[in-house]
Length: 221
Image (cartoon, rainbow, N blue to C red; front, side, top):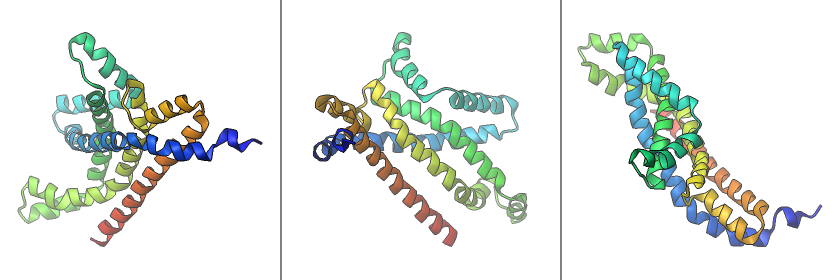
């Protein structure tokens, strides 16, 4: 077997620095989308748990839509479709909005299930001390729920890192887009795609190590 045809080490050394030029976009999009998705997902979760039917159904519709629509379709709708409605966004803004909307649906369900997992006795004990609902959430419920939510939230973040590769389809110069450019220029896509796959793997592995460290800190706390 001609391994040189599958992986060219000299090309890899030349390609990796050029591919890494897209790293700030990959990390930036995934982290910004995750943070905004977490904040909006928390409020969606509260709406989902609301006693008011209209608010609850509104949250359920949002969750159902975002979990049922492929991210690629959502990206294309925002970037290519909204200009027909008079709203034109650049590729970065369109990507952030798409990641925020999509992640908020998944994160809201993680937050809702984490909050629901807290024993009801915690509420009763806190109320018996005369604590207000806002204080109970902030001091008692949310810290415990956060510990439960860390593993699934980490999975969402890892999925978002890998999903940033889809933004190459709307011209965002992230890792995969840079890899396509280098592969086309050198007429060797196999080597370049192996390199970018390894880069994604390293990023996700570092995030996974961070998750393990955070879980240990929370367990100690």
